[in-house]
Length: 64
Image (spheres, rainbow, N blue to C red):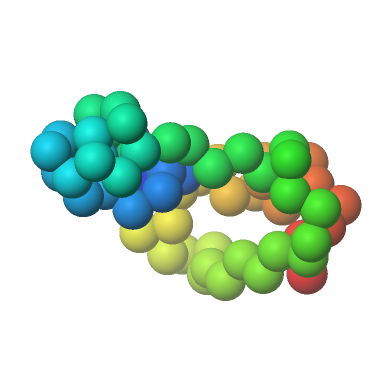
């Protein structure tokens, strides 16, 4: 997530992903399909936090 800037389910490695997800890569999380409240925790000067967090916060109405 930190390197790619995307939100995926847990990565078990290629062999584990094939067994778990039937795909070499774990599936993406889609925030657009989530209806329950979502809690995001970050700090403005957090170097580990992707810059897309602001986009996620302001594009969704279920962020708490």
